[in-house]
Length: 533
Image 1 (cartoon, rainbow, N blue to C red):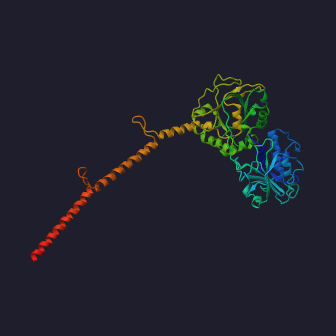
Image 2 (tube, rainbow, N blue to C red):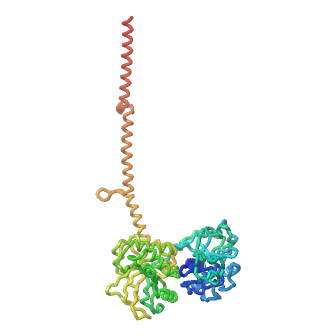
């Protein structure tokens, strides 16, 4: 699940990346960004802040969202006071009283021992910044992205109350994100300490005694189980989620490019408040938009709920386009950017018709289909559809005309084939879902087996590896035969065993001929000498 420091890091990055409206720098109006956010940290108007209000306000929002503390504008029940009591000179003392660990004496070179942690506060004389997640959702403990706020566009500290006259970020650097190793304070060795949060809602002890992190995926719970649930959108405005009887609820968040369901936040908050399991889905228009557009739309809306909800692609393009590659890229992109593994929803005919093997081996399927005898109430029922392709079924939407307590209209009803522990585990993005790789692993092992298996005449050919080995063996045998021919050709024969080699005999015959010629020459010379005498 999302920790306090991770949520704070996401909030600080969000504020620093806001553009049109943006967040400018001001010491006079430094808490206006915090005052104008809703209680989840969303900001939809221009505002201002400074370095200390950015990092402490982000932790206040994180504490409220994750620990349930009241969201009081003056910060009286937050982690840090929202007043003049909170500034760079007081932050170290306030932080230590609130569960932070001072790692200022544990720096090795340019980083603390063990590297940075999400949400770390970097202190310098008159300045503070926060270590945040990278744009893709990853975190580099040795060179994290740093969120901080700087002096305004005119070079003073007053923002809209001074010569600047604007609340917005007029330069793009009044609130900014940059890599730690590229930060001017890093290059000039101006950082003096690092404060790591280790209080309630943290992700565990983070101290200078910890060596370089070696993260391990937690044990995955057994997924087997069943639950009843529903999925809702603006069409179910006014539904009483708590009275519905559903154990799990998928809420429509976004559609296509730029569209956010008007009831999204209302519904999502109601699900969490009622203690139900939450899922969030995006309705795709793959025939009209790029993957990047639609992922940005979805993640831009669901940010505050990451770690609390199962994410889902509702793949049912209104124009009837079924681009499998587009769907796979969307799923892969969301997983890469968030660290959370989404699922995919589609109608039974689409799930069975197209080539989904590469998707089915890595992502759960939530399937829709409405047989004529589908019940209209919440009930655990077995799915009658076999989608093939190696799909693992997360759930079946068995009717779009269901009825639940507390609402008089039609509702989509579902049977989900996982338990609550697994739902929460998947929502929390903890590790890979290895079981979904089982079919792929079996296929790979079968291929290896086939490659290493001898062929049987009339039954099967030799496997690829065995075939290659046999071809090499044939070449070796042929070469060996040629070497034997040469050997035989030059090897003297042994009486009673073998004939002389061909080349050996030719050489021997040449030598014999030379010997005869030498003898005849000698005899001729002797006869000539005798005649002369």
